[in-house]
Image (cartoon, rainbow, N blue to C red; front, side, top):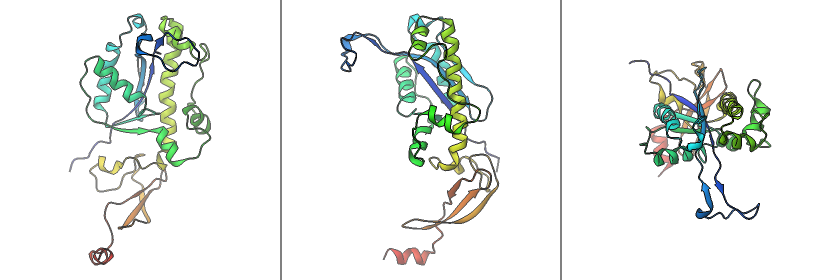
Length: 260
């Protein structure tokens, strides 16, 4: 049997232009469609393959006044089409639906199917941190890449200046966007031992158990019990992750007697 390749995991982050609309109050959230002057679009995106050094990035500098992101989407579509798994922060609710919206508006066909890993969901499911925001997680856990502040263009200014095609703002946006992906990767590597969202065992054909951290140093450690079965528990000796074997170890007679 040929040695299978590990799944291609794409880390992804996008930045979008704001919707520009006519309003009469600062707290007016009931904006009608006829009040919108300019709709949102993707300003920039950054991505990288897990464990790869290369960080991909593309933005609309020099083209932003046309408010057309079609050329920017081509590279993004190609990466998503290659991915087996896409890792992001709050991407299930924001990044992926936004990307898909711009794909269909610009005439792109759907990409190949990929599964999603959302760091926000991993944090919410397993931990009681003070905040689930990437800024808090990276500041608390990361040692190398922590989420950046907008030093030169505070708050909303970076987006408005990019819309004016300010080259300094674009440089800040690129640094900010790329750093989000790098900090996301570092946080995920710290937290992935706690997560069982995806069974990585199905992505390789070797008989040996392999952890999603890449380690083959795995040993049996006790059992997991459910209402219908008993399963071998495995633990990675490198990162500490546990997972359940697929075979019900109860005898045929025991299983039969349980459900009489």
